[in-house]
Image (cartoon, rainbow, N blue to C red; front, top):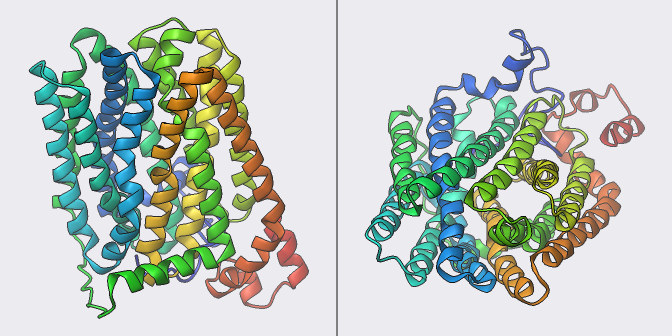
Length: 460
């Protein structure tokens, strides 16, 4: 991404005091969708939105297929582990290459490879020859692709949004897109599984990749030449690690996100068990539960997109982590489908706000030359920890049951949020120079307010 400069370019959250406060001349909705004014981002938003619906269809169909084939909670965890461990192992190296290579080309390649992976799943499932081994191998292949795709996609956003004041809104809209797909995809998957089987879910996913590939081909970009650094990959990786984990605000955000991904997010792996054994439902129930999570996540994304200021997201992050944890704890005790659906709305909102706020903070305070590597560490924290969580959740669920496993995850998320909240005063002091240097608080940069006023503003 280009260096963030000027108003609204960075800080502890999405948007900014300078993020065009008067830009909503067309009303509040126009203001919330302002990043869509950029042609390339609008193309990406439409194409990726369709593709992500297919991705969520495949996620749910894969979980249900594994459960149908094995009936094993442990195997659900193993499949989740196999699909995500390559991302954990390869993302740091991928981040170095994302900083070196053309991110547009990286995305084009990863989308084509992902499409082929989905078609392979569809062919095996529709031919009746698919086994858990096939699912494990193809899931691992997708994990390798994601190791490069996720940091490239995150870092590519700024190349599609010419006005840096709209960057944070684009990040929030990305979250809206992901969670809108989460709302639609599982519901469609539940119906498709019941009517035609898992194979057609994989086929629909493969076709959906054509939308994002077409959007990439239609873009008009100013190509940025990337010069060779002459530095060894391992040396660049070491520099990126030192920067990300040597700067307390980035380190704290990454560690909390990693904890939530490890202990909280694996509830999704156990959802087939909760739907079938605890709530006594079928694929429709699973689809509705995941859809309810998407409703909450979409509401959280809309809330972030409506924010005008970067200020306050540091406080929102631990609050959202607590909401997510409380939702998991309550869901673990529920034995009623309707109540579970309501609780999943709050759970989805808590996780989405925590995750997207973390993304926004990192994107806006990171140094440009480190962006690909730091977003790779974000990928490790967000997606790379999930395989360990899936494996742990599967093993625990086999011993103590899915409800108690989800309960423990919720408690861990709340404790992590409390620890983060205690560090906020120190983190605010560390990001203050970035606020001033990038004009995020222009009244401070021009000397129109004193340090005490700044501290008051930061605590809003």
